[in-house]
Image (tube, rainbow, N blue to C red; front, side, top):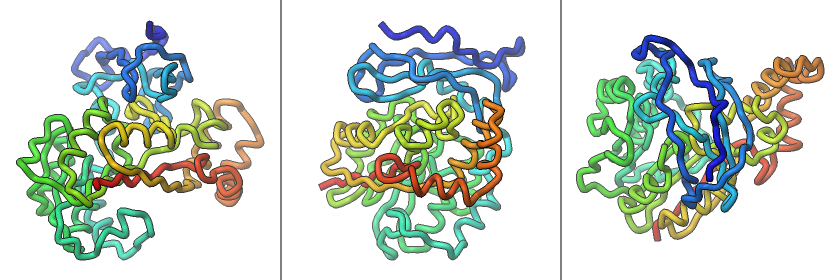
Length: 315
């Protein structure tokens, strides 16, 4: 039987309509293999925005997948996003869309004049869609936040569905590129979502997903203070192995994996760990971007890196 999570203590408030009201919590099976036997991995609070509550991450006894359990019900998870959430800001979207800074990640190196159809899942206010439209793509978006989707449409991105993946109409479209950047960890039923997206991926197309690495060096070192948990918003916590297995199980034909270091994860983790342990050492580390960068370069290599980038192929 699933391990009890009775010590999970979400916010309490007598006013059930307020942001601090007690949310509905759902016990869930493993999102990768469906097993109901799991073990406690850790309990942690919201270290990103500071909403009250303690939340549990468990590890599946059958396949090793980590996930938040119980999870906040979909109709209440919006309470854990601030009203000024930056992904919903129109000005920010315009700045990011017009930025000349480009990297070498897979989403930066999509064909400059793709002339194909691209779907951005969790598109926020549309900055990435605007950039890709300028490069020649016919862009579509899925965004569950009414506010963010409205911002995207106000910027001229008419084909944004206010929905989750499960209920997105797609209207018969199929896609040459599908992106989920920092999104897959938020989706309550990620395998079903990926299976639907696979069915909408054209032959020769690709899906690009990025997630924090819950098996990385920083996650292991900082434990509950690792910012990548981002509880309770993140409901699935991936390793390289579990992400690859989920994408293959969803029907993708090949999965290539890349890794990234995130010095910001080390610095924030050091800050939180110093506060939790009153450690002078970690206070010193947190105060120095150079020290955090050095730790990341030493420890966050390959499968121990801070972020996983998966490129799943439709062949």
